[in-house]
Image (cartoon, rainbow, N blue to C red; front, top):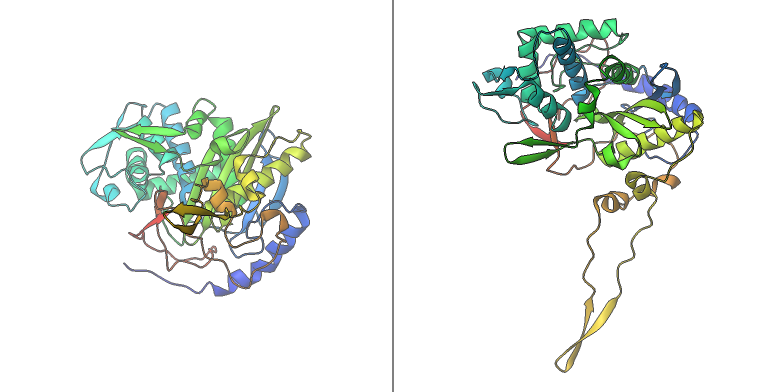
Length: 386
């Protein structure tokens, strides 16, 4: 694998103080534990109908989109459906190049295929990189040409800081975006394709005998959330764009740079709560993700004596199984409500991820932040859980 390199080290230091200052100025609450002040954190919340920005922190700083790229891929597919260039039941053939993409993937062999609608569902749930590449070839003739089309369409939508190099979001130093641009894209997907937006709320996708669960745990975990997309590569951290509606008010938010999907979702929930409050929407009961953030540590059960023959043994009570949210809420860290915003001495590394949530190829050596003159990195073949 060839990689063209160019120094980017000074960029993180130049932006870190700016991001931290913005975050402290606009995020007065302390209910989330995202990496405010880190080299890859940014966030924004806007009102979907008008596009008015309610909250932002580093929203125009360059970031790697990871699988948020597939939002633009799907925008292009929805346009092709609207314009009659393809149909939901049209066949998407898997080429050798598309089939070679690293996980997350469906693993369709070259020459086989699936329908356009199946491909849409594979992208919004499993975030399948092989299917994204195949869709790009189906609509654009080649994935490279499709990426050029994506960039041109992004410019027309007002996404002035976004540049695409592939259809999947696999690591490429030249593929960059911003939180503002991704929230804008999420908003336009809802406004421009109201008859297609429901795909982003799909919780399960049946593929053969498998039931593929959507990577977006905000669906069902946050009251009112009905889309849109998550993303992860090592260089970006855990990203998400979320749309939620309460009492007739719809918000779209984007968060970049979480150290885990739990931290990312928890912070996104706090941002949306603050946005709804500013729009005059009454607060709701905490979601399971937010409740887990403030859950007290479980006290281990005391040992109890057990009679065995003529000997009394001290036997600990069997451990109780904890939910995934309780596990995520009890690592060696303070509860989120007690954590002050801070600027870490070095950019944090993504936390360990569950092996069953696989999304994108890893970029283990791609830890620098993007800039306009960033050079290009080829796709990695290592799977990384999200």
